[in-house]
Image: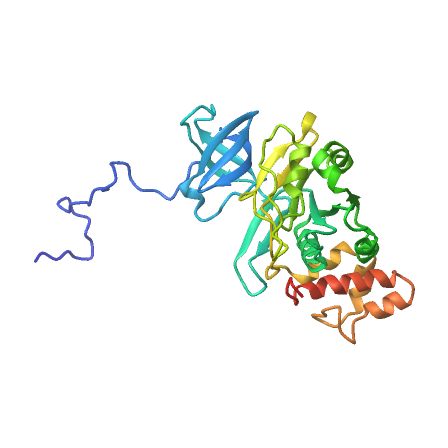
Length: 337
């Protein structure tokens, strides 16, 4: 057998050809400087529907992006066939930096986080006052996810004809969260409820989240009437849960380009394994300064926490500190608690 010396650079050495073609392999990736900008409207089994220059374009993720996935609301760059015609397919080659992210995990013990929506300004938490009964723990979890992800919360309370809203609103009074109350008749009539909610949506991208059966998709249909989404099914009389009618997130434009509504699937739980508790306090600016004298790694719910003295000195409302601690404790409790 022939052996080569230390210098194998000889004319008779045969180089192995590239089995996949004649072009040499390279780690240099194209910059795609001429790529068009678009927004992801929905994702379905690896195919992404995007809006590019007013056209709806079907696309797939380029292999060079690796495991980085695009989600509804993402700003992306696309190449290929951008005509939006039948049987055409573009490629997403870049995912731009996100301004905000709504994340959730299956439960608090699950380390795998799922990005639900990107670049939303606001999180509309839709909950029924009855049928199904409101779940304050789930609302708290959605609030924590909103604060941690950089979204402003909005409470949308439905079915006020079945139960009054005052008791539930009292729990969140100290948080100064804007809210809208609608009745069941208004929800199905659409116009009155939609008009009141629309005031909070103008010029913004709002993700709607809520437990199944609360009327979330019905309200979205009223806000975007031209979209013929199927209405929510009846609530199960045994479990109190509604049937899922939205199986994937979908971004829909409001009339006159006033903003965007993102309808998300109904949730039964909202895991917070991914949330850094230190970010939640950013939603309480009057309490942030009081944490300077807290012990290291303070959970803000222990005997040595400096926030107790800060509030006692009159720098903040005690109700606000209670609300902060309730939200921080939410991560340690199950949704059904």
